[in-house]
Length: 366
Image: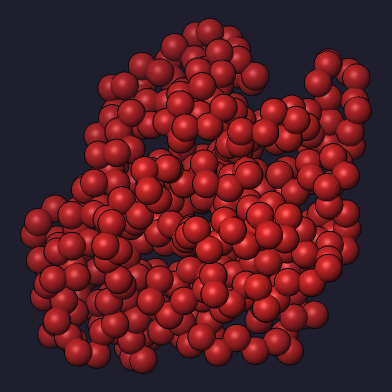
């Protein structure tokens, strides 16, 4: 069986370093808000290129906290609108609705799967306060047009960087392109923890200090609460593991790029729509390798029978979810067609040559 993602094998690559870091943390007797978290935050900020980084409990909380902080700072209020891609994971939408903000959906670019920047301006109203860009599947979505649009209308750009750590646009890393960015370190991410974890990066000191307090029960001094905050803190064990793995993220991403190239050159079945490899390969870190076909379900069943695990990212778009009944009447044909056709193939730094060849061969024979 070729696993979709062999987390055991990935983490065993760094077994000794991870075990040493965990044992050191265990013996320290300090498990929250300690040195391991501070060190990881410092190293993450340095890697991304931002002034500040804050470890939080998970990726959803990272986004929730960013928007909550903007509300606390008086820059947004419940009822304000935020531009968001229609083709995204539901966490992007939850972060808005949890804060009383209204998502305004924009269709994706058919080639990149990311928000179509050319369609944003027509969706802006007097209530629009931000654009939430999602670097979906590991590919950056950014342009001078987007930057100029945000400046023209005085909009915040918030990055959902759950899937694209290490990607670059003109030598600037994702997580340092907008005003603030939310990261997820869910175990299956390119930089994955051994449980849930997330982070926020920004260059805005006031925003950072507000988020730091909000994530700690709304407190910046023990037992003194200035906000109605959350309990969303990265623990020391996850910080220790992530700091070990952060050193290897460039290797992880480079390996994924090489595998993606092999898939793109090797898969020749005319029934398969392959993802686009950007002209600047640094713009993509291939968190997932997504193909499309009208016979998606048949292909998935066929590959399962061949011993190849696949996953659908994602079967139902946010606007069609029961949780968001108020948007069920909306129509986004490009998004909906994608969700009917997409299929993610195995891709990671531990996928070997034989497995890559077997995947290509199986798809070409479908």
